[in-house]
Length: 157
Length: 303
Image (cartoon, rainbow over all chains, first blue to last red; front, side, top):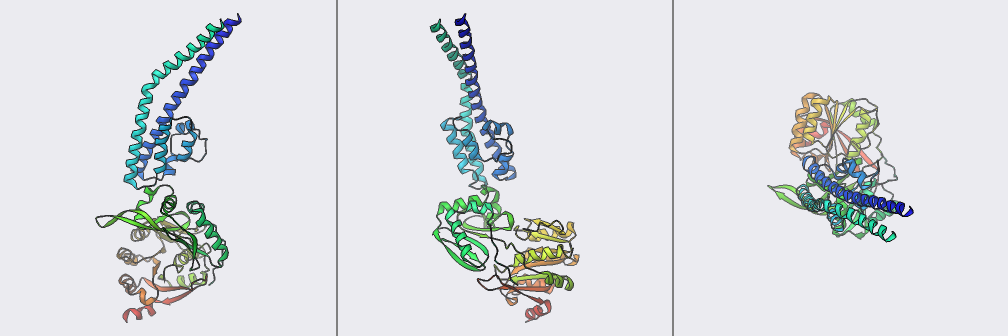
């Protein structure tokens, strides 16, 4: 009886673990997509209205800001957004965003727009790759966690 | 009239933009000097310079190229592109009436400056916080009527005087005043809710004067640093509207002032009834003014 309960608990744990890992991966994709949208929004605001960076960031999507970990009423800067996403993005993705952030606002309009386009393009490639891999990763996570649980169950039983 | 030594707290955005060594030099000089801070000058590859009541003091360290670019970037609020137009005209518009002059390597297109790179000099001009007492002067100008031209060499206190007159005329005397504040310097600190004041910030002077007369129905228009043909034309066009212009211009003396064709033309047209000469000795906060009637200037023009 105990073994059955233990086995069921193990399976539930495996399922919950896989859900956690899948949602983490999903959030990773959303975060990356959010940064890409932010760069595109920055491009648009500079091109149309020549708005300064702090004002553009204030208008950023709230859902994206919450995803990054910004609390309501907290001051926003690109550097802060990047800091809050440590360990939630790949080193390559972080490097792209950090390069963009370090150059943001330091040049004139035409060059700034070109840089926005360039970095947005780079992030889009990373995002496309992640989105392509997501279904496979999801299956892999479920398979591995369930198999690991089953393996332990077999050993116990 | 005496402008007293004041404790000056640099605005946060200036403090954050300056290299820490420059800021410490400024603080030290501020404590040691008896004058009021007027300018912080940064020059690439050279020591920083501070102007206190017209007297110059050098900092201890030279500023490098990267530091200069960083200061420029921070003074632009992290958005150089948003200030491109004014940077090409030689300045950054900042809050609190602070004018920041910049120069560097110009990029030209069709003979016009389209970008400025490699910033070599930055001049942060700090507004005088305390307004001089111009109560009697304002009463005289309003009684005499007509326009007034304030002149002095650069750094003579013209903008401070304009601000003080705007405060008196629109406040205590209750007249409608429109300020064409192209550089955002005149109106700084004019926050009193009882002032009868309209501020056209960032407008080119000529256009601002036309718009103010057309839509704001002022009794007085105040603007800074007139001198171009377009500005003279706008002021001449305003002649028939009955609005009195109070303006300032660079000029070491009345003789030098009226050597400028545009100013002489404005005088002949009777725009300015009063001329106010400002004089200040180097190293002193003491500022002396002399009110000259247009008849006395007229003699100079005819001569």
